[in-house]
Each structure stands twice: as C-alpha cells, then as structure tokens.
Image (tube, rainbow, N blue to C red):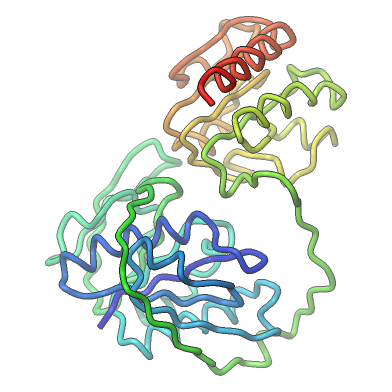
Length: 322
C-alpha cells in the first residue's frame, strides 16, 4: 500500500511541483514504512522522479489526454489509487490540481484537505496544518476517512533529494467518452520564459510603470534573476500585459521564494494572492502604499531610477561570482 502522487508535466517534462510532491510524500512514506508511487500522464523520462523518492511510476500514455481535462484526469488518478490500494493521495495546488483534487476526493469517498503547508502533525489521528483566510491564518484539520486526499500549498515544502530505485509500469485506465464532450480546439502557451507556476522568483509590475513600453527594464531584471514576470490586475485590465501574467487573489496566486513588486500599491486582493511568498520586496514612490505594511524589504523611490541600477549591480555580482 503505497502513497500516490500525481506528477504533473507539461510538454513531456515534469514540473517542479512534481518533485516537491515526491519529496513530501517520501517523508510521510518513510514514517509509515511504505513507498511512493507516481501516476504520470503523457510524460517523458520518469527517472528524475527517483531522485526524490518515487519507487514506482504508473505511466499513462493516451492521445485523448494531450489536453488537460479535469474529469478524465481525476478518473485516471482515482483508478491508479484503487489499483495501488493507496490510502493517501497527494496533489499540488497548481491551477490544474485545484480542479482535480476535489474530484479525486469525491471519486474515492475520501476526506480532503487543501492548502496543506507541512507534514502531518499526527497520523493517528491524521492531522495536517493548512493555510486559511487567504493565507492570513492557519488551522489544524483532522481527516477521519480511510482514504485521504491532500493538496499541498505551492513552495511550502521544498525539494529534498532521496535517491530510490525505480520501476515503471504502463497503465491503461478506462476513459469515459462522456468526459470528452467538450472539445479543446487550441491551447495558447507562453514559451521560452520561466512560467509563474514554476518560478522561484517573480518580478511583478503595476501601473507605476506608466505603460507597456516600459516593461523592458522589468524583463531585464527578471532575466538576470532567472525570474518570471507578472503584473497587477489593473495592468492586465488595461491590456498592457496578458491576463496570464495577472497575479493575486483574482489572478494566479503565487508562493515564491522571492516576490518583487514594482509600482504596485498593494490592494488587498493582490496581497492575499502573493502573501505566501517567503520574501517580499516592494519598490514604490509612495511611502504610504499599503504594500509596505507586508513587505520584508521596501524601497521608496522611482522605479525608473532604481531598476536599472539594481539590474546592473546584479549583473556585476553574477560576473564576479561566476
């Protein structure tokens, strides 16, 4: 009876969250004296998962699953859990998995805890710590059902290498044609950039940058840091940046190691969506901007003066330490 994780991938490559889930599940599995199994969908080489404690991979390969389909993917995970007799199923908090986890829980008649931010506090009774109230508080949730589904908060555990021997098995779950009644004609994806979902660092801009023509200096800083670029809601509403870059409670929530906000005042919805980031840096001309109240570091000044200097200093630091 192994723990089961859903190892997310995109274009055949595993996302960072897949390795974080493996690291997390491995710690629980060791405490329970069991192993970790991963179910993958149209993924490539699975050997990377072995570096983070996965002992077995159920490989699902089916062209019908090339585009994400919540019902179909949830059914795949359900069948994998039933096949392995898994009592604990671990998913991430990515956009896809936020749809998946409740469906998996319903399908397995399981208790479900979302936004889990640490290892179980106890396995008998089974208790986990969770973020609550838009990351402003924590609560302790007890799951009493036989099968348990956990959704792990982004970047809340980290990567822990634990090399394990790996076995692979082709898995062909039955697919319900009714789940594919909605046809996906096309999927637009950003290529060649660090995605917000996988980024350890996000550099985000607001209306303080005055227009889309000034985004180059933000992108240059992001390139030096290996970061993803993002924006506030007003910026995406104005059409300065694509909606895919909108972060916040009403956009994409982020939980990065470093979040740099440039020219963003800090509306409550924006702060709620980025509050789980470990270190928050704010650059703004307004010393009274709400964002400074939650910032770990704040710079009061003009971004048009600060960003080029900051970028240059970082380039010099990298050159001297390469």
